[in-house]
Structures are given as C-alpha cells and as structure tokens.
Amino acid sequence: MNNTPTLFNCTAFLGMRVVASGSLEHVVTSVMDALDNRDLTQLFIFDDSTGKLIDVDFRGSTDDVLKRLGEQPGDLSVTEVNHQPTRRVGRPKLGVVSGEVTLLPRHWEWLKNQPGGASVTLRKLIDEARHAGEKKSTIRESQEATYNFMTAMAGNFHHYEEALRAMYAGDLDRFHHFIDDWVPDIRDHVKKLAANAFNEGNQ
Image (tube, rainbow, N blue to C red; front, side, top):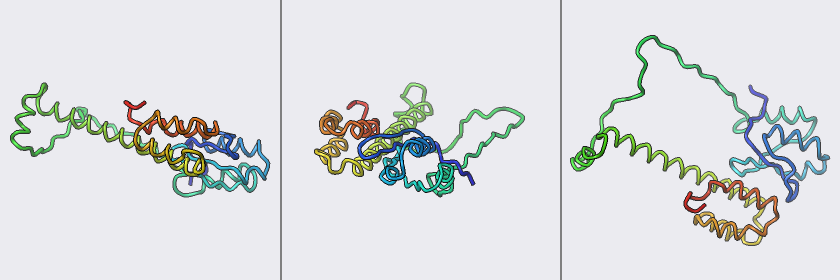
C-alpha cells in the first residue's frame, strides 16, 4: 500500500483567507507548522480539481496525519505502475488498424470528393469530434468544481445564484461582474477554478 498522499493540488482556507496551497502533503505540513490546534479544527481544505472538501484528521504529529491520508481508500492515495513496452524484433507497427465502416451512398460520394480521400477525411472528422468532446468535458469539470466550492464557501454571498446562472450560461463578463466584490481570496479562488468553465469565444 502507498502511504504517501497523491500530489493533486489543494487549497486550505481559515475562515475566508487562504493559508496554504499546493500538494496535499505540502498543505498539511504547512498548516501544522503555522497553526495551533484551535485553528486546525476550523480549517477547510479543498481539492482544486473537484472543488470538494478533503477530510483531514489533524490528530497527532505531521507524520501521523500524512500516514492516515495515505491509508485512505479512493482518490487520496494512488499507486503508480510503470509499464514498460515489450520490444519485439521485426517490422514496427505503424499504428493503423483496419476495420469496416458502413455508410450510405451519399456519404461515400461526399467522402470521395474530399481532399486526401475517404480515410484521411474520416480520421480528421474523428479527431475533431474527439477534441470537441474533450473540450466539453473540461468545461463541465471546471463548472462542477466551481459550483462545489462556491456552494461550500460563498453560498450566502451577494449574487451567488446570479453568478452560478451566468457561469452555466457561458457569460464570463456577467460572472465576473457578480463576484468582483466578494472577499478577495474567495473571489480569486473561484476565478481559478472557473478558468476552463467557459467556451474560448467567451473568454
């Protein structure tokens, strides 16, 4: 079992103020060196990738805390496996895989008239679709992380609901307008989490 916390970035808040940011190990070590036990009980640590709170038991020494984090199942610990490719003698594979594609006559006619032929065109279309899908996934993940953090730390702030609606509507200017007068550390962290929450044309 790997007893070292994974190196995802996180941010620690004491009240409305950021007190540490970086890897979980760095944040835990920093706050235990700088804060007393009373402050530690009021500390909130958020996973920057999801905007969700991380449950940290601060009892004991720094080594004790880190060890417990490394023993937690799920997202807080990972075991990396280095897979080395098997080398084979002979002609190298070019990465091209043949397969069957079923299209209507009008589709084949259109493909034949494209520069480079059917295979090149199909590969381009697939790559474009994959890129579009990845972009949508990135936007969705950023929106979800922003929502999670805002709900936990800014749910009672002025224009909280309006800011969320602006984000989901893809309106970056209105989103910034609604959060600009928030507590600086909260506002700046929201902007950080929402960096990928908007289409490129709206940034």
